[in-house]
Amino acid sequence: MNATTTARTRIASRIVAASVVAALAGTATMTGAAAHESASATKSTPLDQPAQGGKLQDAVDAIMKTGTVGVVAESTDPRGHRYATAGVTDTATGAPVRPGDRFRMASATKTFVATVVLQLVGEGRLSLDDTVEKWLPGVVSGNGNDGSKVTVRQLLQHTSGLFNYTADFPLLADVDGFQANRYKTWTDEQLVAIAMRHKPDFEPGTKWSYSNTGYILAGMIIERVTGDTWQQEVTRRIVRPLGMRHTTAPTTDIRIPGRHLHGYSDFGGSGETIDTTEFNPTAGGAAGAMIGTTADLTRFYAALLGGRLLHPAELAEMKTTVPTPDLDVVWPGAGYGLGLLRVPLSCGGSYYSHPGDLPGYTTRDGISEDGRKIVVLNTTGDGARDLSTEQAQNALVDRELCAPRKQ
Image 1 (cartoon, rainbow, N blue to C red):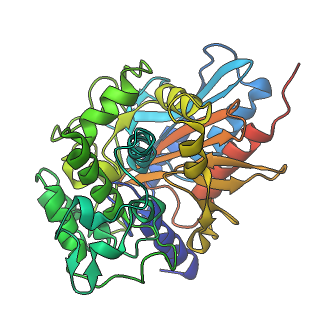
Image 2 (cartoon, rainbow, N blue to C red):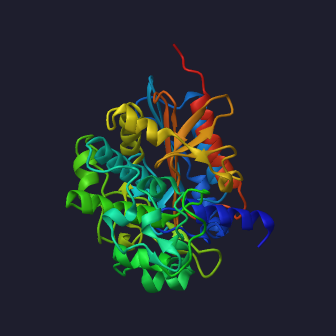
């Protein structure tokens, strides 16, 4: 593993969602023949409007050339929606990727969970300064872990210092580990217990480090406050009111319902490339279990940044960021708020986002500061061993958000 691959592996261990995979960033592409067949299947899929001058399609094709299996992208601005797709949904059937295909959104789930927590704050039922111990007594303890020193804000902000449970998770160790554990049901308590076997990475509030453990705990706090699971609250408060008909927050269902993209990974070259589509989403829970489409995610981000889901005070809290030096190799100068990443644009200003990675799936998105431009894409397969897939995805987001609007 060269230095670039090592860097990519380190970043993936920070940003992946329900199943953060250190191996994911360094995984190999599909076998060469399949990858080239997928690349040759690229196509533009205009719905409301065609991509201007093929630019969106060009960017999608550039991602495909780095070794992905399939790509679906949607770009939205005041003029309407544009789609571009490439590759196949299923290597066994060769079915082409189409707009509307569902996928595992991975850590994009965190923005939904953070939104529910902040809604509860706005309702006066919870405070960002509440400690974990107040709501979950005794859950964060042992090996120097102390729930009385960790706040709800720090869970959502990744400044809790709590060990990231997915960094010591059998499901993600290698192909054999995934195959042996993919259908197992995990409780939130079991996932947190994995983290509690480790000492904290640092004192709460002193540094930033991505930890899926914090969002598992946030989901548990939602249930303690409301009496309903985080899945029920996300569905009741966000998914149904916004008419997100193709988005689900599953519990133990291993399948992706309806027309969907298949995921493929070899977990860092630890075995042959396998279909990772089916697995028990309890492994990710509130850190990344949700399933959706580009259109539904676009609808969610438009409502969130448009001020329709949170009061101004809570939205301001969500958008207030701290530095994330660990992410500079992929997103230089980025900062993390409460379930939102803020990334500088090449044309000035910045955009909001939340990346998501699972074995075989990568979600990337970008929302302009005024909420009027939104880009969402998902890619399947491992992509390149170096940073070229990440760079191509980032280039697509940046170019779409920086493109001048026609009057």
